Length: 413
Image (cartoon, rainbow, N blue to C red):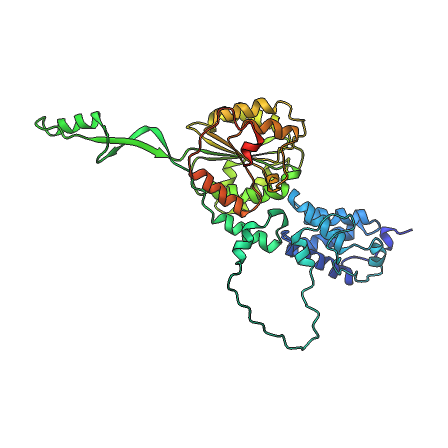
């Protein structure tokens, strides 16, 4: 029987080197793992021991994972790196485990590996003998696609770590123009079609009344408020991380942007997204939100928004972007009434759904059926190209539908 007393100190021998290699793998896959966490992992492994594989898993998990969105990468990396079921007995003998990546790119459970992890574990060499001169090949690049064009169409879910980093930089540079609408206020104009009687009378008094110079005015125009309500449930987790960067970009690009996230509860993250540094903003949002990658209660969260926040943020004809896949844990209880109330309270309600990337998608779930009857536009949001198309949609005026889109065919021409 293996006991913690019979296990060598993990800080000695090759085991410490293995944990260091595992930490490097996590860091290359995008997790914030530094030397301090490596030392903490060695101390934790020495304290807990290696008698059980489950204990070893949760020991490293407690050290290296501090956000819910890091859970999936860590889980896959652990089961690939330490994939031998008897690895703990081998580690007690201080042998270096074989960490050659699986050829099929899938862990033992059959789940598809993340592109970020696959790129990290892919062998770097091409199998050529050492010292062999590398053959130089010239390629004609005429009529080929650039990396940026290819990146535009890659699904966020299938991006590698390098592609995700490049996509985040592209999102930060993205601008979301919104059409300007007339307001009730006026501003002075040198010429126009509407006379400013007050300014004309003041000008006549200043001139002594001999002449009355005519003054003009015109309506002020400005973009309406923008409200973003994003689903961060488990089914949306891979997309909500990227969309959080999108929300940060538009929040720092203009005024009157209000951002909310919801899973089982609604959370206002507007103030945190106003930080100029996107990493600081995302970290503060992660600390604030407690229902990340959990269930979804769309009806209850929209009710909270309509009761608590609608009067504050939906004034002056706000545009609302509702980002969700429409999968509701509460079987769409109360959702139809709340989405109808939201639709009637805003200038335009646009539903962004990553599932619309599939050509065969139809709103068959109860939540999707309740929502689709009360939206003005229904679009996919799954890659950079879809975000660019969204910018084009918001710049041109569109007719508002009083009863929403009641036919699926009219939404998906």
